[in-house]
Image (cartoon, rainbow, N blue to C red):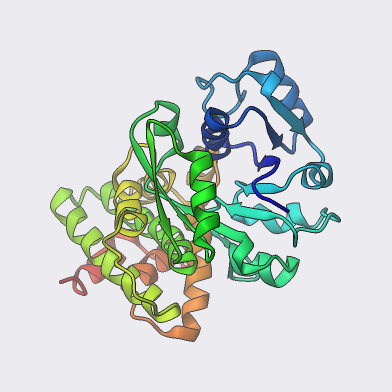
Length: 331
């Protein structure tokens, strides 16, 4: 198979919508899977996603919509996964079409719960997709700013850098610049951890700790992230690059960061359940906190920020008390 062939977006949220917008700048047609038939019908009638990034208009004659996962996989060659990580396993359970001959780009910033596996490992071990046919996309890049066509950068990582460049060419446009990497594992873990640290930053914001402390927290977060990814996957990398530090910064500061906003509510005294209801969207960092905590039982990396967020979210300990304890670990 010569990739990319027919391209499919799998997912109906804001990031899926932003990626579809980019793809249609460089491709005449795309396939697009959304689970809900009613959303597809509304999309066709209104010319935009009825639930996410509603200001982004589409020429729906250039989109082949599907609500059947097997059908869209069968009729596509390159698959872009943009479903929330907690739901990926459930979605793929309905799949009977093989994935092993597809080129897959994961735009999922999370870990498969229960399995505690990054997406690339899950696809390789459970669906026998060759490593060289799996790529990941890293930020810093919020869907809302893509919708506004603000200058943004994407990092595409794949063991086969020629395929990474090919995928990058599908997404590159006048307001999207692309960077190529082979650090699939590092970028995947970094994209999970930055959500955890954004929750921590939000908690501190909710506690009114101020900008000075926010800066110290984030500077310690990048050191913690570096320790972890260098232990789990020890290769030469610079975590000051945009796929690591840049993604951490935007997620820890931006008004568009759902993890930061979720953490702010926790810092203000909301319960986890109340904050989740208020958000009305999946907060990947909530699930990522538990998964990384369990994964780190094997590696024993010193991760005080992760431990603090886990204590607050899962052990229901006082946010104010836990953050005070955390401050003594910072340099």
